[in-house]
Each structure stands twice: as C-alpha cells, then as structure tokens.
Length: 196
Image (cartoon, rainbow, N blue to C red; front, side, top):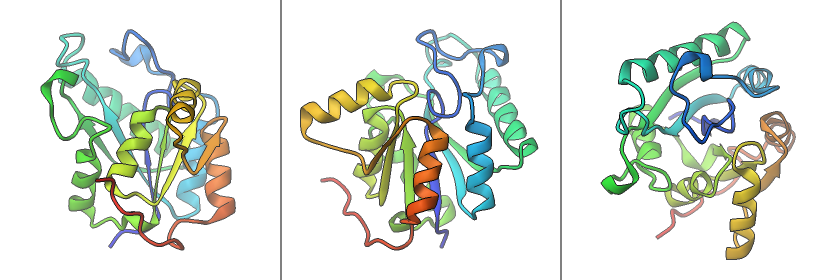
C-alpha cells in the first residue's frame, strides 16, 4: 500500500491558471516556487500525483494530444528540478456530463487508489478551489490544504460562508509544503470518513 501521497490540483497550484484555459505549451507557466516545492516533497519521501479537471479538449479548445504534451512537459520539468510526479489523473468531461470523475466528485482519487493501492489516511490534497477540498473530503483523504494562488481566496470565502474549513490555508504551494513537512501529519492520523 502506498503511503504519504500528496495529491495536487494543477492550474492555480502548480502553474498559473487562466480563465481562457491552458491550451498550448506556450501558455503553461509554473508558479514561482512550485518546482522547488515539488522537489522538496519528493526528497522528503512523499509521492506526488496530479488530480485535475481538464475540459478544454471537450470544449473544442485544444486536442487531447496537446493536453498530453503539456503533461509530458510538466513531468519532465519537475524531474529536471529534482522532483517527481508519479501520475496525472484527468477528468476530460464537461460539467454538464454528470460524470463521477469531475471534482468535487471523488472519482479521480478512487481511480488513483485502485491503481496504486493508496492509503487515504496518510494522504493530502493541495488545491486552490472549494471543489478540490470537497473532492478530498468526499473520498476521505486525511489532510486538506488550500493555497491562495489561483482561486484560493474565492474558495476561502466560500468555505467561510458554509462554515467549512480545510486543515490549513497556505499562501502558495511552497508554504503548503512547509506545513506538511513541519507537521508531519500524514500517516499519523486516523482515517477521515468519506463524506456521505
């Protein structure tokens, strides 16, 4: 069973987000410090996986091949910086499709768990939106971290209005990693029950 897994949203967490979608390699830009953060997680023995909604191909804005090229570049640049992304799980569907894999539905997390035998009680989700955190809660992932890059400030307001809260709110991915490494909470807690 795979322990100490950190799931990461892509846009707004690792790279700059865009209201027009990231459609070409030229539009993919790492956020400051994100490569260093992924390297630090890798060096500390955490397994990193990306969990991302990517409907641009279904919207006709890019080809599936272009999306795959972006993800190859993402993994290669992370590896060149000393980090490692084990896998990328992508929901390609439109919101109206009603699939079980588009966050906040937990289908992508369950797919990762089936493939790698992941222990959710020693896993974390880092995201920049309410749907990222809800996805983790829906699957019973132990630790949730909201970053304020991307849509993080909007998500924090949404959570406050609903009386909910992630385990930690960080300025960016580097600060999120600081907290995860400092608290060393993964693998020490009891399983979080999946939301009903």
